[in-house]
Length: 110
Length: 123
Image 1 (cartoon, each protein chain N blue to C red):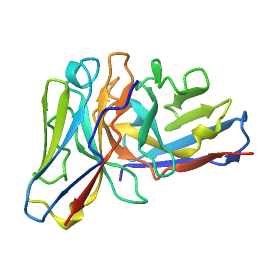
Image 2 (cartoon, each protein chain N blue to C red; image 1 turned 180 degrees about the vertical axis):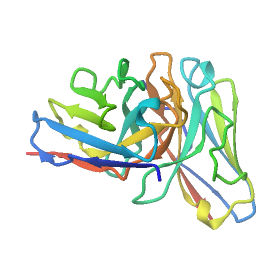
Image 3 (cartoon, chains in turn green, red; image 1 turned 120 degrees about the vertical axis):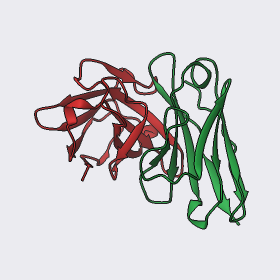
Protein backbone atom coordinates (compact mmCIF):
# COMPACT_ATOMS: atom_id res chain seq x y z
CA UNK A 1 0.00 0.00 0.00
CA UNK A 2 2.37 2.72 -1.17
CA UNK A 3 1.14 6.27 -0.74
CA UNK A 4 -0.03 8.14 -3.80
CA UNK A 5 2.47 10.69 -5.11
CA UNK A 6 1.69 14.40 -4.77
CA UNK A 7 3.98 17.43 -5.13
CA UNK A 8 4.99 18.67 -1.67
CA UNK A 9 4.01 22.23 -2.46
CA UNK A 10 2.35 24.46 -5.04
CA UNK A 11 1.68 28.17 -5.04
CA UNK A 12 -0.33 30.76 -6.88
CA UNK A 13 -1.56 34.32 -6.71
CA UNK A 14 -5.16 35.31 -5.98
CA UNK A 15 -7.29 34.91 -9.10
CA UNK A 16 -4.94 32.43 -10.74
CA UNK A 17 -5.53 28.71 -11.25
CA UNK A 18 -3.46 25.92 -9.74
CA UNK A 19 -3.49 22.19 -10.35
CA UNK A 20 -2.36 19.53 -7.89
CA UNK A 21 -1.47 16.13 -9.31
CA UNK A 22 -1.85 12.75 -7.67
CA UNK A 23 -0.12 9.76 -9.24
CA UNK A 24 -0.87 6.16 -8.40
CA UNK A 25 -1.00 2.88 -10.26
CA UNK A 26 -3.47 0.78 -12.18
CA UNK A 27 -4.29 -0.90 -8.86
CA UNK A 28 -5.70 2.27 -7.36
CA UNK A 29 -6.12 5.62 -9.17
CA UNK A 30 -6.04 4.12 -12.66
CA UNK A 31 -8.30 1.20 -11.87
CA UNK A 32 -11.30 2.91 -10.31
CA UNK A 33 -13.21 6.17 -10.50
CA UNK A 34 -12.96 6.42 -6.72
CA UNK A 35 -10.57 9.29 -6.14
CA UNK A 36 -11.34 11.96 -3.57
CA UNK A 37 -9.65 15.16 -2.45
CA UNK A 38 -9.50 16.68 1.03
CA UNK A 39 -8.60 20.13 2.29
CA UNK A 40 -7.06 20.52 5.74
CA UNK A 41 -6.09 23.68 7.59
CA UNK A 42 -3.92 23.54 10.74
CA UNK A 43 -5.63 22.10 13.77
CA UNK A 44 -8.80 21.07 11.95
CA UNK A 45 -10.25 17.88 10.54
CA UNK A 46 -10.03 17.26 6.80
CA UNK A 47 -12.86 18.50 4.57
CA UNK A 48 -14.08 16.59 1.51
CA UNK A 49 -13.75 18.72 -1.62
CA UNK A 50 -14.16 16.22 -4.47
CA UNK A 51 -15.29 12.58 -4.55
CA UNK A 52 -15.53 9.90 -7.22
CA UNK A 53 -13.01 11.89 -9.32
CA UNK A 54 -15.30 14.76 -10.35
CA UNK A 55 -18.19 15.13 -7.90
CA UNK A 56 -18.41 18.15 -5.63
CA UNK A 57 -20.28 17.85 -2.31
CA UNK A 58 -22.86 20.52 -1.63
CA UNK A 59 -21.28 23.64 -0.22
CA UNK A 60 -17.95 23.26 -2.01
CA UNK A 61 -17.39 26.18 -4.41
CA UNK A 62 -17.48 25.50 -8.13
CA UNK A 63 -13.90 26.78 -8.33
CA UNK A 64 -12.79 23.31 -7.25
CA UNK A 65 -12.81 20.61 -9.91
CA UNK A 66 -11.36 17.15 -10.31
CA UNK A 67 -10.25 15.01 -13.23
CA UNK A 68 -8.33 11.87 -14.02
CA UNK A 69 -6.18 10.57 -16.86
CA UNK A 70 -4.69 7.12 -16.61
CA UNK A 71 -2.98 6.68 -13.26
CA UNK A 72 -2.95 10.39 -12.43
CA UNK A 73 -5.76 12.39 -10.86
CA UNK A 74 -5.79 16.16 -10.60
CA UNK A 75 -7.44 18.83 -8.48
CA UNK A 76 -7.78 22.24 -10.10
CA UNK A 77 -8.62 25.37 -8.16
CA UNK A 78 -9.67 28.27 -10.36
CA UNK A 79 -9.88 31.87 -9.24
CA UNK A 80 -7.60 31.19 -6.29
CA UNK A 81 -8.57 32.87 -3.02
CA UNK A 82 -6.55 33.54 0.10
CA UNK A 83 -8.77 31.19 2.09
CA UNK A 84 -7.80 28.30 -0.20
CA UNK A 85 -4.38 28.18 1.47
CA UNK A 86 -4.26 24.73 3.09
CA UNK A 87 -2.91 21.21 2.77
CA UNK A 88 -4.60 19.05 0.14
CA UNK A 89 -4.68 15.27 0.12
CA UNK A 90 -5.79 12.92 -2.61
CA UNK A 91 -7.22 9.52 -1.76
CA UNK A 92 -8.09 6.41 -3.76
CA UNK A 93 -9.81 3.10 -3.35
CA UNK A 94 -7.49 0.17 -4.15
CA UNK A 95 -7.64 -3.28 -5.70
CA UNK A 96 -7.44 -4.88 -2.24
CA UNK A 97 -10.50 -2.92 -1.00
CA UNK A 98 -8.31 -0.65 1.09
CA UNK A 99 -7.87 3.10 0.84
CA UNK A 100 -4.63 4.98 0.21
CA UNK A 101 -3.87 8.69 0.66
CA UNK A 102 -1.31 10.85 -1.03
CA UNK A 103 1.46 12.47 0.98
CA UNK A 104 -0.23 15.86 0.83
CA UNK A 105 0.42 19.14 -0.97
CA UNK A 106 0.80 22.49 0.76
CA UNK A 107 -0.90 25.22 -1.22
CA UNK A 108 0.43 28.71 -0.65
CA UNK A 109 -1.54 31.70 -1.93
CA UNK A 110 1.00 34.45 -2.53
CA UNK B 1 -26.74 18.58 12.29
CA UNK B 2 -24.59 15.63 11.27
CA UNK B 3 -21.94 15.03 13.92
CA UNK B 4 -19.26 12.53 14.87
CA UNK B 5 -17.64 12.65 18.30
CA UNK B 6 -14.61 10.51 19.07
CA UNK B 7 -13.42 9.53 22.53
CA UNK B 8 -11.07 7.10 24.22
CA UNK B 9 -7.68 8.48 23.24
CA UNK B 10 -5.01 8.28 25.92
CA UNK B 11 -1.34 7.78 26.76
CA UNK B 12 -0.52 4.05 26.67
CA UNK B 13 2.66 2.02 26.94
CA UNK B 14 4.06 0.05 24.00
CA UNK B 15 2.32 -3.30 23.78
CA UNK B 16 -0.77 -1.93 25.46
CA UNK B 17 -4.38 -1.69 24.32
CA UNK B 18 -6.98 1.02 23.88
CA UNK B 19 -10.56 1.24 22.62
CA UNK B 20 -11.70 4.27 20.67
CA UNK B 21 -15.36 5.16 20.23
CA UNK B 22 -17.20 7.44 17.81
CA UNK B 23 -20.73 8.60 18.60
CA UNK B 24 -22.77 9.49 15.53
CA UNK B 25 -25.80 11.78 15.38
CA UNK B 26 -27.91 13.67 12.86
CA UNK B 27 -28.10 10.91 10.23
CA UNK B 28 -29.27 7.32 9.82
CA UNK B 29 -26.05 5.68 11.00
CA UNK B 30 -27.01 2.18 9.83
CA UNK B 31 -27.22 3.36 6.20
CA UNK B 32 -23.59 4.45 5.90
CA UNK B 33 -20.21 2.75 5.74
CA UNK B 34 -17.61 4.26 8.05
CA UNK B 35 -13.84 4.60 8.33
CA UNK B 36 -11.08 5.41 10.80
CA UNK B 37 -8.25 7.63 9.58
CA UNK B 38 -5.19 8.71 11.57
CA UNK B 39 -2.63 11.46 11.36
CA UNK B 40 0.72 11.28 13.13
CA UNK B 41 2.06 14.59 14.48
CA UNK B 42 3.20 16.76 11.59
CA UNK B 43 2.50 14.02 9.05
CA UNK B 44 -0.13 13.21 6.43
CA UNK B 45 -3.36 11.26 6.56
CA UNK B 46 -3.37 7.46 6.79
CA UNK B 47 -6.50 5.35 6.35
CA UNK B 48 -6.70 2.74 9.10
CA UNK B 49 -9.88 0.71 8.66
CA UNK B 50 -13.32 0.68 7.06
CA UNK B 51 -16.59 -1.11 7.77
CA UNK B 52 -19.75 -1.67 5.73
CA UNK B 53 -23.11 -0.28 6.80
CA UNK B 54 -24.23 -3.54 8.41
CA UNK B 55 -20.84 -4.28 9.98
CA UNK B 56 -20.55 -7.56 8.11
CA UNK B 57 -17.51 -6.49 6.05
CA UNK B 58 -14.34 -4.99 7.50
CA UNK B 59 -11.18 -3.75 5.84
CA UNK B 60 -7.77 -2.84 7.27
CA UNK B 61 -4.54 -1.15 6.26
CA UNK B 62 -1.59 -3.55 6.22
CA UNK B 63 0.08 -1.50 8.97
CA UNK B 64 -2.66 -2.39 11.50
CA UNK B 65 -4.02 -5.72 10.25
CA UNK B 66 -4.07 -8.29 13.05
CA UNK B 67 -3.62 -5.62 15.74
CA UNK B 68 -6.65 -3.32 15.28
CA UNK B 69 -10.31 -4.27 15.02
CA UNK B 70 -13.14 -2.09 13.74
CA UNK B 71 -16.75 -2.66 14.80
CA UNK B 72 -20.08 -0.87 15.01
CA UNK B 73 -23.30 -1.00 17.00
CA UNK B 74 -26.09 0.32 14.81
CA UNK B 75 -28.56 0.20 17.70
CA UNK B 76 -26.38 2.68 19.61
CA UNK B 77 -25.10 4.71 16.63
CA UNK B 78 -21.55 3.96 17.66
CA UNK B 79 -18.38 3.08 15.76
CA UNK B 80 -15.44 1.55 17.61
CA UNK B 81 -11.78 0.78 17.03
CA UNK B 82 -9.95 -1.68 19.28
CA UNK B 83 -6.21 -1.06 19.27
CA UNK B 84 -3.99 -3.89 20.53
CA UNK B 85 -0.22 -4.46 20.56
CA UNK B 86 0.32 -0.75 20.26
CA UNK B 87 3.60 0.62 18.93
CA UNK B 88 5.23 4.04 19.05
CA UNK B 89 4.40 4.52 15.38
CA UNK B 90 0.68 4.26 16.20
CA UNK B 91 0.91 7.64 17.94
CA UNK B 92 -1.53 9.87 16.09
CA UNK B 93 -4.78 11.76 16.04
CA UNK B 94 -7.51 9.28 15.17
CA UNK B 95 -10.56 10.45 13.22
CA UNK B 96 -13.77 8.62 12.48
CA UNK B 97 -15.38 9.51 9.17
CA UNK B 98 -18.68 8.86 7.42
CA UNK B 99 -19.09 7.60 3.86
CA UNK B 100 -20.48 10.23 1.52
CA UNK B 101 -23.40 8.18 0.22
CA UNK B 102 -25.85 5.69 1.76
CA UNK B 103 -24.28 2.67 0.09
CA UNK B 104 -23.14 -0.44 1.88
CA UNK B 105 -19.46 -0.27 0.98
CA UNK B 106 -18.88 3.42 0.28
CA UNK B 107 -16.30 3.93 3.03
CA UNK B 108 -13.64 5.37 0.72
CA UNK B 109 -15.19 8.85 0.18
CA UNK B 110 -15.56 10.52 3.58
CA UNK B 111 -17.74 13.61 3.89
CA UNK B 112 -18.11 14.09 7.65
CA UNK B 113 -15.24 13.82 10.11
CA UNK B 114 -15.06 14.00 13.87
CA UNK B 115 -12.73 16.34 15.71
CA UNK B 116 -10.30 13.51 16.49
CA UNK B 117 -8.99 11.77 19.58
CA UNK B 118 -5.30 11.59 20.48
CA UNK B 119 -3.45 8.31 21.01
CA UNK B 120 0.07 8.50 22.37
CA UNK B 121 2.15 5.34 22.66
CA UNK B 122 5.16 5.87 24.88
CA UNK B 123 6.88 4.41 27.90
